[in-house]
Structures are given as structure tokens and as C-alpha cells.
Image (cartoon, rainbow, N blue to C red; front, side, top):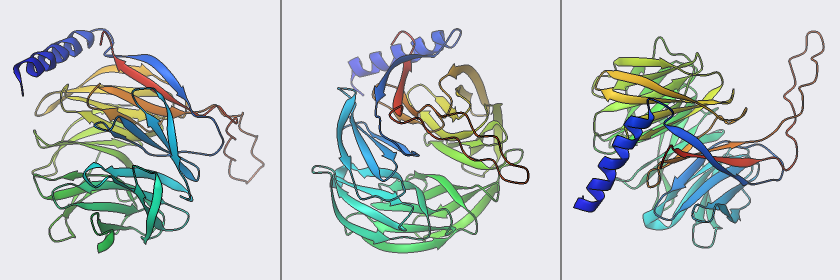
Length: 343
């Protein structure tokens, strides 16, 4: 790191430390998206200053410098998200309703080809060391491994559980994936393409979001019983946990500030600081909006992005009938932007 960059980095860390006594993050602005239909995962390509946001049957591309829509990637039925591979200028989507991954040219936003996956491809991870994209098939209880350069399936890995989010640990040669129905983290050997360990998450249950601090060998997992856990990636031991809100889905970690984020659908995001190898301390319960359950972090600006929308009141359920999900109010879909206080 150059001296000026190091000074700026140190100043930012000190700023966050000071802000933690008050509020670490604040609301900055919102980016209108509009339209109808649900959403799921969003990803940031920090170098390209782009954000990719799933929305019904398409992926919306956001220019992070202009805070505006830059384009769309279409023909992605039931899309859960898109993971960019910057060095190839390609993206790989998870099209849940057709059991395929679209290979997308990120310059033109056009689909190059489609690759068959398992049933209901959902989340993903990218192993940059091996150039492989992991597609986690939720209903199929498997992972489809794609050679990103050749756009071909390299392996299919049985997981024996419904996978949620995953993350690659290139230095360790592993990929970690939450198994929501097993209350475990599956540990995949990236060279062998097989599960080599399963780490129980008790007291955490129904894990969803996951994030990695590779430098300190720490894994962060958000669970539906309102806890975020910190695990040791050398042995899978749960070292610490903090309370979070209801309806969690996403998780993010900022290497520069050592802050972990848990985005919850109830309308809060818990921010905690990794203060020591076995110490995770809550520093803020950031008020967001109801339905803002997924999150993406821009490591360059340290901003976080959370999609949300307004919903009509839920209809009263009939006796013996499962409650119906409330309908989204058309054209209320937006992207909430939060950043460091004083930054």
C-alpha cells in the first residue's frame, strides 16, 4: 500500500472507531428502480463501479458513480442474482425458473449462452484462483461448478442439504456454503470438488447470509433465529455471536474496517465489529426499511446497498389456509444507500 493510501485507510478506521460510539452508518440516498416483481441477490463490481440487482425476470445494472440505472440483462426467468467475473468481462446468472445459468457479456449486457444447472439455482461464489463459478442449487441440494473461461460445467457436487449463500476462500482452497435445512456450513475442497467437512452452527439455526474475513480466518453466518455467528475457518468452531433482527437474509464484511453486516427484513441492519479473534461486538442497529433483507458492500467507498419496496396490507387468511404474501406496490422498488457517518 502506498503511504498516502495507508494514511487514508488508517484515518477511515479511526473514523469508524469514533463513530461506533454514536452511529457508524447513516442513510445517504435512494436509487429508484420501479417496475414490478420480486428481487433477491445484488452484487458489486467495485472496479467497474457497477452493481447488479436481480429483479423478477431480469438483472438491473446500476452505475455507482451516477447512482442511476445503466442497463438491463434480460431473459433470466426467476433470476436470483448475477456474479461478475471482471477479468473475463463476463457474468453468470442463476435463473431459478429454468434451471440454467446465463453467461453474459458485461460490455454489451447480452447473453452469450446458457448452462444447465441443478434444480432452482440460487446463490453463487467465485473461486478466482481456479477460475470457477459455484452455482448453489437450492432445491437440487447440489453445487454446479462452472469453468468460467470455457463456460462449461466442471463438476456437480452433492450437498445433502438446501444451500443458501456461499463464499470462496481462495487462500485455503475452500468454498463455504450454508445448508439452511441442516443448520450447517458445508466445507468444499476446491481442488477435489467434494465436501470435506460439515460444521454445525448451534446455537444458530436456518443459516442464510455468509461472509469471510480471509486474513483472520473468520467466517460470519447470519441465522433466522436472530443471531450472527463468527466461526474459525481452521476448525469450524463458533467463537462468538451477536443478536440481530428478524427476517435476515444477507451478510457482508468489510476487510478495511473489520465491520460485519446482517441485513434483516424487519427493517434493520445489525453492524458488528470484529475486535479480536474471539470478540464480535455490536456497534449499531441501523434502521433501514421493511423488506430490506439482502445487502451488497462496495469495498472502495464502504457504502452498503439494500433493495426494498412498499407492500399492500396482507389479506386476512381464511381458516385453515396458509397466509398469502402481500403484494408489492408497483413502481416502489428502490435501492437504499447507506455510508459511514462523517465519510
